Length: 336
View: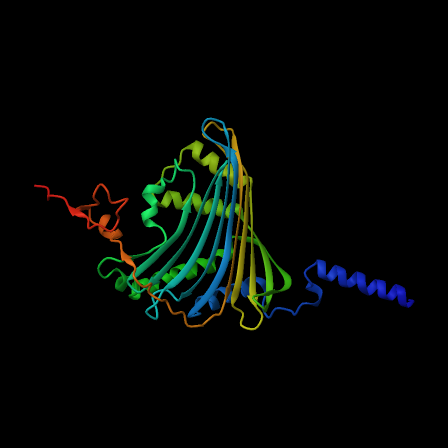
C-alpha cells in the first residue's frame, strides 16, 4: 500500500473511531455495564459532599380545553453544593434560574435556597411575568431580600435520627433498583466530565415496566383508575421513549454525570382525541466529591413563620399576610 493510500486509510479509521465515541480505543471498563452503574451509584451515595450543575428543559405542544393551541417551554438551570443529608451540621445551597414561556407570556425568576441545620434561607432575586398573573404590588415586598424559614420544633432532629438514615438508604436502594427498568445498557466509550476521564453508558428505558410500576403505584395509593384513565395512561406509554446516560469517573468509579431524555409523541385528552406531545431533558453533573461544604447564614435575614401559618389548623394567617408575610399569625378561638 503506497503512502497516500495508507495515510487515507488511517485517517478514515480515525474518523470512524471518533464518530463512534472512540469505543475502539477506549480503555476496557473493569466490570459489565450493569455492575458498573450499580457500583457508580453506590459509590456516589457514600460521598460526604459534592458540587453540582445542571439543566432541565421541557417542551409541551398541545391544546387547551377549548381546542386552542397552547405551547409551553421551560428551562431551569441549577448549581449548588450539598453535604450528605442530615450530617455534619450543614445542608445545601442551590441557585435556580427559571425561564418559562406559555404561548406569548414569559415568566422569569432567579432564586437561591440555603439550608443550615434547622433553618432554610430563601432569596428571590426577581420575578417577572404578565401583570395579570403576577401583580407587582403584591410580590415586590418579597423580592431581593433573604427570608429565614425555620423548621418547626424538633423536626430537624427527627429528620437526622436513625429513622431518617433508613429512609435515605431506601432512596439509595430505589436508585440502585432503577437499572431493572432498562431494557438495554451499552458502553459508549469515554468522555471528559469536569476535566476527568469518564466511562460513558447509554441505556433505553423499558416503558412497559415503567407503565406497570405506575399502575401498581396508583393502586397501592387507593386511587381507582377508570377504563378511560387506564386507556389514556397506556396510550401515553405506548408513544413514549426515554433514554438515560451515565458517566462514571475512570479513577474512582463514582457517578459524575447523568442525563435523561424523554419524549411523549401522543397525549390524549378527555375526549379521546390527541391533545399534544411533550419532550424533556434533564442533565446533571457532579464534582468536588468530599470537599467540605460550608453554608453561610445570610446576614440580616427576615424570619418568615411559614410552618406556623399552615401548622395544626389552629392558626391562620391574617388577611394581609400575602403583602406582609412576616406578621405573626393570629389564633382562632378554640371550638367548644
